[in-house]
Picture (cartoon, rainbow, N blue to C red):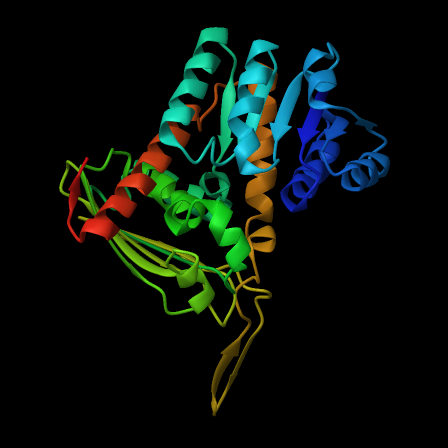
Length: 328
């Protein structure tokens, strides 16, 4: 049984706590959160300890750490865990500053500790099946990829100010998916964006609607469509076109019942938000992390993936500001 120290008892931490406790090979050993009421409540729910970061890192009974705390704590906690030889699971991003990410990854490499970055969309069963079919040659050579990602409603402006902006906070998932699906590193990026959803987001210095085009060395192209608002639920779709056909993965709906009549057709809306839509993905990525802990697998989503996704976010912002295509 692997004992896990969970950093962060907020919304994402609570999602991970369920999966840690449910897995036959892992136990939620301790919870660490500066807001004690949250830490105590979550620890009591799973009969876990409440520890400080230092206590968890120095505890020989802790085999792995799951970092789901505030973004600005990630890099420091990763480095601390690496120093204490803990196997590391960290939610994206490693940090909002690219140089800080690179410093952090050097420390991880120096201590030779496994690091998994939680780009959970790679582990969504629908998207993974699409990727597998592509790799099996179902549509031949990739020619174009369309990623649609729209949130049901915009976040508060206060969150926007500390999030790093739309590209680093939201689109970073899609940058990772584009690399993952095509299987190449893009060679150029062009981004356009505007503020049409919430004026407060614009006043905070960010955008809420964006289109990004990535070009790959093979000639394949990817288009990412983002919006902070979708009046019909959490819109998550992928379309991969190749020389021999098309692969698509549509939305997961609240239910699969459809009403068809002489006045038209009616079906349910997409799942409301990421906690519902990617529930199975969170489980699948935890299963993979347990395999890493047990030595049965190496990390499929590494610190380098975190670094490259952030790099693309930075270059997208450069393109947005200059109005020009940026070579990578």
